[in-house]
Amino acid sequence: MELPVKLRLSCVLASALAAASFMAAPPSWAGPPDIGPLPEIKYDEKKAALGKRLFSDPRLSGDAAISCASCHDPKEGFTKRAPLHIAYPGSDHFRNAPTLINTAHKGGKSGIPWHWDVRIGTSLNDMTRDMLTESYVMNMDMRIMQERLKQDPVYVQMFKDAWDGKEPANGRVRDSIPEFLKSLVSKNVPFDQGKLSSDAKAGMELFKGKAGCINCHNGVLFTDGKPHNTGVPENPEVFKNPARHLTYITFMFSLGVEDRFNWRRDIGYMTVSHDEKDLGKFITPGLRELKYTAPYMHNGMIATLDDVVEFYNQGGGEDRPGLKDGLMKPLGLSAAEKKSLVAFLLSLSGDDLAYEPEKPNLSYPAIPNWYEAKN
Image 1 (cartoon, rainbow, N blue to C red):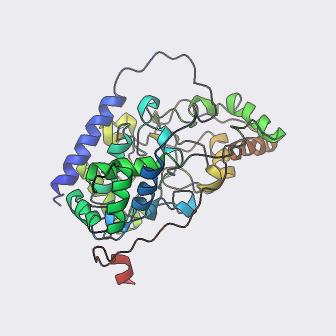
Image 2: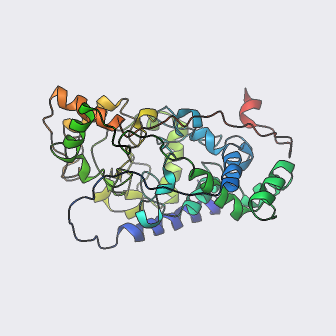
Image 3: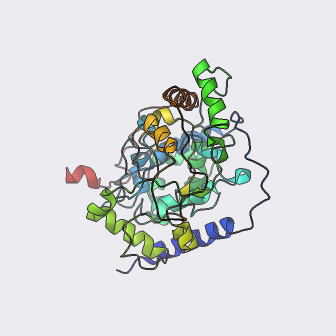
């Protein structure tokens, strides 16, 4: 199967950037950073309003079938409450959609990269471009996208207002959507406000101590930004569903993975390093807003927070000898301790940021919606 040049080049470049970042010599170990409240983040309100409209506009995908909000639904914690998310028509995705809440705190000085397999660096602009142009995500030729936006009088005015009289352009799209994402930050979080119940306080002590969660879940986003193998079980749907399996094989092909037809598991960070010792490693997920973002893990295989805590209490799942992270050991938590740990994890969620996405008028230009036509 021959892939589009655009897909091959974008994936190879992403792989090279991520590999360069993660194969550098690690800093000396001085213990995990502490956990703490989110710092304030500022954004341009006009650019954010423009980005919000773009975020929900299916015209940003090749045949106007899906928008950013299709996989990162504002009504579902800016993710999808399903194990695996959708993809561009004709394909289906093989991983869970991560939430975009607090996304703006990734990248930059934090050094936290993108994607479950950490194949994209730390630029939010680069991440936005990747999602817009990848063939199995939104499959957009950005030159076409630019011309579509110029035909919508609402966009023409919004770009003028937000960008000092300038017209719609690809770079301004890639900067406006991230500006909107800066507005998606946790609000009124009990942990950040120091308003923890007695159970949550006990859970925080377990988190930092006996349970050892802080070793990987640290910093303001509760993630070290590194890939680890914790033995998460495979989601069989990826391999039983031909559309998902074909998307996954195509993805591995684009990143130059050897023996790609033989894998019956998600190889994770190995797609970047091409080293089998990294098989099954995935980035440590952040722990904020877990109340709204079930199911959990890179493939949605753990349904509830109680199940997540029990998974780690058991020392994680099974994998080949030598692959699973050495920190994964049975914790010996009592029922009361597990309850306290869940209470602390829930204290990291704030107000529900849900809203009803705007439905742009698709008559500018007239593009038939693939999903609506099909149904």
